[in-house]
Amino acid sequence: MKKVFVNELEKHLGKEVVMSGFVDTVRDKKWVMFVVLRDSTGKVQLTLEKSEEKNAEMIELFQKVTKDSVVEVNGTVSKNEAVKLGGIEIIPEEVKVLSQAEELPYDYNNLDGVNIDTRLDYRFLDIRNERNMLIRQIESCMTEGMRDYLYKNNFCEIHSPKLIAAASESGSEVFEVKYFERSAYLAQSPQFYKQMVLASGLDKVFEVGPVFRAEKSNTYRHATEYTSFDLEFAYVDSVEDVMNVEEDLLIAGLTKVKEKYGETIKEIFGKEVIVPSKPFPRMDLNDVYQELNKRYGYKIPEEDVGDMNNETESLISKYAMEEYGHEFIFITGFSSKKRAFYHMRDENGIPNGYDLIWRGTEITTGAQREHRYEILKAQAKEKGLGKDVDFYLDFFKYGCPPHGGFAIGVDRLTMLLLGLPSLKETMLLFRGPNRIEP
Image 1 (spheres, rainbow, N blue to C red):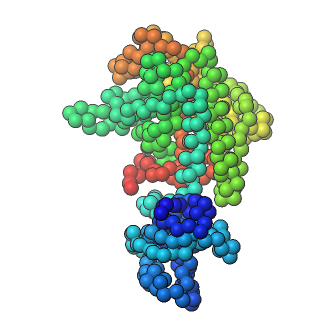
Image 2: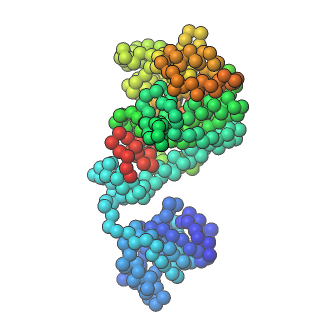
């Protein structure tokens, strides 16, 4: 007999199947017992007539079994229009208890008044909430859509190391770990290794994996470990090539989500999945400062000149909707002091890079990279980076094509898509300055 999931039952009407799931509810009536089982794809009703002697043992079992115990059922799939759960029920022949559940610490179906940190302490229970499980499935769907786009466009998926010998990129905000008799560090990003692979001759690469930031930031949008969707590709003529690929990537991911979950997201989260049109608006940072001052009376704080802060990002999103009717906007023209040393600069010393803002929050920093060894070495020196990046600079000594790329925080993207208050809601297991368990 085939072991099936709830969403497959309709294909097996009139047949005997095996299915497993959590005991969701037991309704013990005078003449009949109804048991609802739940798996990751939905719920199904088991119907046990008490007048049938063969059901006596199973009825006794379900009278003792606790909520959220896991059982395996062997039974026949039947059509019954009176059943609210899709008009389908299972008439059981045999039931086994695979795991007896203890009393739950809180009701995951009623999270009102349950502190988010308590929920995270029992995250394995928290995800049993249908809404929270749906978040995981939506994020998976969006990532699948973006991956599919890259595979169809001949990108090669790579898996770079997360233990590295030197403090990468900025040389700060890294986690130091003991590595036998020496120190190692957790990678802030796969940036250096993406570029290494391009120097090897592969033209298009991407990676979806963990990155680590030793930031003591207790904000709704920061985490010390998160999942980054990174890509890099060769033979770009300008940063416009990079922005064009990101437009197509996001359109692919959001299209996939809208097709599969659009109506559900509107119903459960109250958010419209809007697939953006091309091209996304583009603005220079100095123009942003002027427009936000003129329209909203906003002046960038002195310490943030050459960059943006949370308020700038929020206002530029408002401006983009008012001026362009668009949820996304690229911002260019950042100060070289605020950007990484490996960003290529134009003749005026301005990095050929951008931030992409969506729904009031930065979701990407992207750029055309500097691929010329001598210039790259000088820019690293300017930033005060010495021997720590020597291994990286070696990648460019023996020929490297012009290239560019970007990274997207998958969990932040999901947070904004669903209008959730923080990464604690979207990440499978949140990691922050005060949380490293479970």
